[in-house]
Length: 333
Image 1 (tube, rainbow, N blue to C red):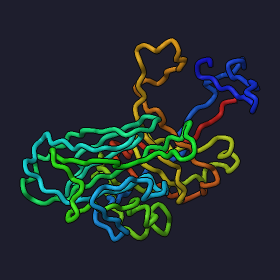
Image 2 (image 1 turned 90 degrees about the horizontal axis):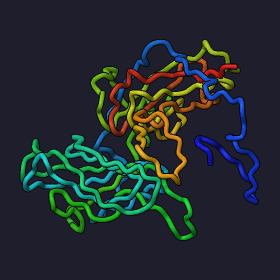
Image 3 (image 1 turned 60 degrees about the vertical axis):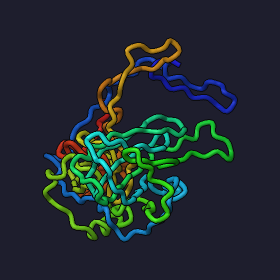
Image 4 (image 1 turned 135 degrees about the horizontal axis):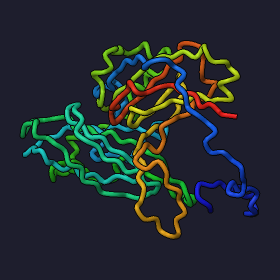
C-alpha cells in the first residue's frame, strides 16, 4: 500500500477503491477551534482504596477477564505485606500480559507503574523498581496493584483461544513470593468505586464529595475530574457538519465521559519514530514525539445546549488539567 492510504476490497478480494489514486485532495481542509471560552472549571475526587464493593479472595492472584468479563478495564489486586528490608530500589516482579498496565501502591501511596502497549498476546515477566525507602521494616502494609487492560487482541484467533489480562502467575516483592499463602490472601475488586457509583452521571455525581481545589490533584494518580460546559452559542446543524471534540492535551491516560456516555479510553502516549524503516514497511511516520491521539470525538447526539457534564478518570495522573478544552473541527470549503 502507498503511504497513508486506504483501500477497500469486496469479499472476493477485488480492489474497489484506493485513496492513493484520488487526486486533487487537500489534506489540510479542516481547522480546530475552541468553542468554550477560558479554562474549564474542574473539581476532583480521589478514587478510594477502601470501599464496600464486592470482593473475591484467593491465595493466588486471579486472571482479570474471568472476574471482570471485560465489563471494565480495571481490576484491583490487594494483599497485606511485611517488608524485611525496604529500600529505594525494591523490585516488584509480576507475570502479566502484553497490552496491559499495572499501577503499584503501598498504603494508598502511588509507587510506580508498568505499561505495555503492544498489539499482541503473550505472557511477560516484568521487573518494576519501586522506592520503598520511606517505609519501615517488619511492619504490615497494604500492597495494591491496579491492572488496566489496554485492549484484547483477537487477530487470527480461532475458537477456544482467548486473551488474558491482569496477573497470570507469580508476584514477588523484594524477592519475597506473594502467592500460595492461605492465611494472607489476595483480595480482588472488579472495577472502580467511581464506576460502581456512576459518578460520571448527573445522579451518581451527587453521591460523592467533589473538591473544587483541582490544582492540588495535578499529577495525582487514580483521580476523577469533573466540569461543565455550554454550547448554546452553536447551531445544532453545525454540530453535525463540524464535530465537537475533547482536546485531551494535559491529560495522560484514562476514560472520559460526556453526559454519562463513555467516550472510551484516551491515552496521550508519545508517538515514536524509527530512524530507519525496513524496506518492507511502508509506514508514513508523522508527528514524531507528539501524542498519537490528542482529539476525541463527542457524538452530537450526546450534547446539550447548556450544562454538559464532562467527567474524566485519570489513572496515571494529569500534568495539566487546565489545558484540556472543548474544540470544534471546522471543515473549510
